[in-house]
Length: 135
Image 1 (cartoon, rainbow, N blue to C red):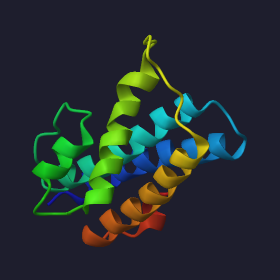
Image 2 (cartoon, rainbow, N blue to C red; image 1 turned 90 degrees about the vertical axis):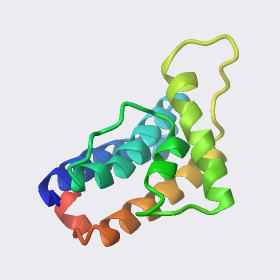
Image 3 (tube, rainbow, N blue to C red; image 1 turned 60 degrees about the vertical axis):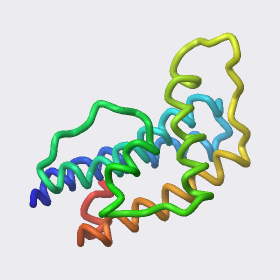
Image 4 (cartoon, rainbow, N blue to C red; image 1 turned 120 degrees about the vertical axis):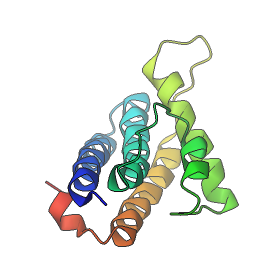
């Protein structure tokens, strides 16, 4: 177990989450917010790998990560659909694409709520005080 590495990953996830939340609150561009939120979810999930001293996978597909982590955390059907939506933020939000649609504020609000729950759930599972990594 590598609690320190997991804390480092969770700290970085918190930075992306809080950045996305601040940008959401000031009604910034939703595509930019979506990228921060995607990274927050991805890095939160990868904290499990860091905790176990496992190889950190070079994937941005959140459902792929969820499948690999099924012995650590599970997601219901609605959450899996949301993970698929959030995964698309990485490509559609990061790069100029012809079919790029901006995520709606309602959708991002759902993602913010999901990530808040996920972050706290992962901290609980790993027995890490969330306040230790929220800096």
